Image (tube, rainbow, N blue to C red):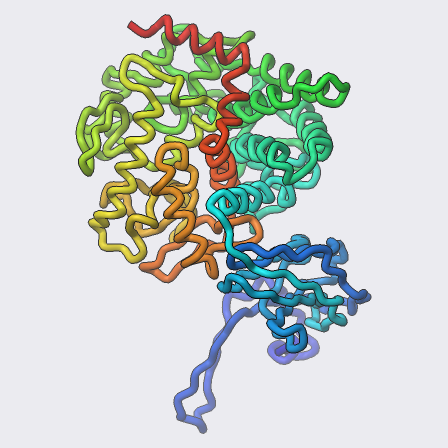
Length: 568
């Protein structure tokens, strides 16, 4: 239903849309009968010129176990509001089943049925909801899939976030989709770089396509604003300038996000090992970015025990957040120690990351809300599983993912633990917690587990397997990115999310960020920090590809040797 605004204001009154604070519905006093109104969507639409329609063309239709992926020729005309998707079970009677943002030339139609052929047409809808003629039909059949095929399906869908959904100027990852189309997230981009390597190796794209994208990425990164060689958290893609998204203090270098980016870039440097000029150029650009990174600057003072998270060009160390583990920042210390040009002493791993004096203890007690693990070491048993290192019962699962997408935890042993074993125990503790389900949340169990950081009904939060930090939401990345640690439990979760929740969870970039069955809520977004770890850690489980590439780097090997000399 289209209602001109003049119905509300009169012809001679100008209404500023931003001044509207709400809509009120009322019923005539002459009618006291009970009425029910269903509202699907309300929006203000421009009084646009009618679009010049053309007949859309579906490029491909691919069937999977319970869904069909459709792609069509991209739409760039701003007058087009939606692409509308029609489905038929008999090739004759078509019903609308969905709409898609015209900037995304793909739609995942979750049919919920295996072993059936479906037929599709699409149309274009303009800003005034006028509709074009339908495309020619295409068909695809859903089919039974093996476990290996399901893994590839999830990897490819997650990879698409960084391939098809990338920011256009830089080729790097956006923070969220849907979200700002021109804002790059640095850490998510590092993870996405590793997902692109998976895509090239799995032949989701050709190596030539990957090379072209990495030439774009590395050219952008060389020109982008940096702070003593360190990237900021967010960037405006068209300008290459830092975007102070979290406030004016967030306008400089972010050493942790930089670490996630460098982990990805060093993996890519190892992957693009060809002798041709293009691959050599990629390697050379990454080497310059790596060697220009002034890790030692972020020590703040020559005698500081800690690396500092942020530095601002006009406010210096105003945030002054020391990096203290156990959390996602181990990779920052390991890379700082490994730097060939601006290394910090390997002793800082123990004085900073694994700090055991009052600074480290109070820091861990503050965010963990417990003294358990406040000395970095833990030693307690949770759900029948011993935890060597970690605050409380180990924390959110992304602690076991972000630093270990390139660094192989099998080869990381310090004076306290081996980190594959420790990470595996954290994943097992998280799994058992959801099986026990002390909060009695809907959906939790053997095949729905993995508390971690994600979107939620009340916004972003980092959930973990303790009742005070469990909000009842399940993020698919938690269990699926834990495949190297818990392959059986992770596969159960993947199948549950796809086969039983796929009608609300599955989309063109794979699993949506999170869901909360207790609140009947599903996230509307895919998150850049959460899609890539699924593609990458599944690959590390299947072939060890990213671990092998990253750990082959001579600088990384040297850094680990320096660290080993600090171990008693």
